[in-house]
Image (cartoon, rainbow, N blue to C red):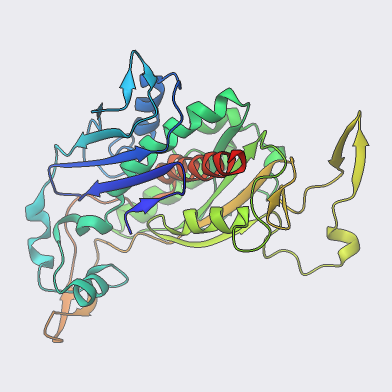
Length: 353
């Protein structure tokens, strides 16, 4: 499937080495002020070549809107947009044409479709996430009107990690470092680790933490439409994501007396003294901050010799060429935010039906 969402829907198209990446946003409410500078800034956070610790592929990633906007506002009809690919080097992938890269999409795509676009991984390339970031930026503009904010940050790279408590950090400082970590000291350690891995031609994984503030009570359905299930599905659809947990997640092997979130009257508003549930109870938002963690594996394409087989099953050794991220975490932060924003807006519109 290439369409995401129920009411607020994104259909994306394009490949890494095709002419363009783009999409159509359907179900977007009319009257949203389209802050083009903000939308472009979100793309700039995702684009390659933004620092020494990301892929050196240089792309402007300038978005062009084709429909659905009049006099600076959304009209309620489908919003079409595209971003041209301008800096492909398809020849870098010639040596991969007839081999299967370990842990990559090559083998499964070939078996499922009978062919594959080996140039930059085609549709399985993370360049596809451009469309998600554009749609997520539009969703953020709507959510901002309702006082809802979505903030993500790099909380772990390799064995360097922040404490699992977002309230201990000033998230306004996330953009102060190229690794998008709000703790300056940890950020420097992460950057140094990425450089070491990059020098060896290897890659490394990590974790992105996301916080959604201002979500109203009542988003989500109690059985098959649970809000955390939708967020999990959205995150697991992102390239290289291997894990999702919300609230205390896997750290719940404790007593109920330790983990229950007690209610109290907070000046006329029902609130909870703790938020181990991560802002979601019984699949429905409870008005507290929603927070979750997303685990990203190391990038599969490494600039080292690897044992594999060719398309005929013959043993062979490959060494990838080209421009690749040693760590996707810095560029993944805006993608996580975009997917979260689309889910929250979609569920908000569903609740209004």
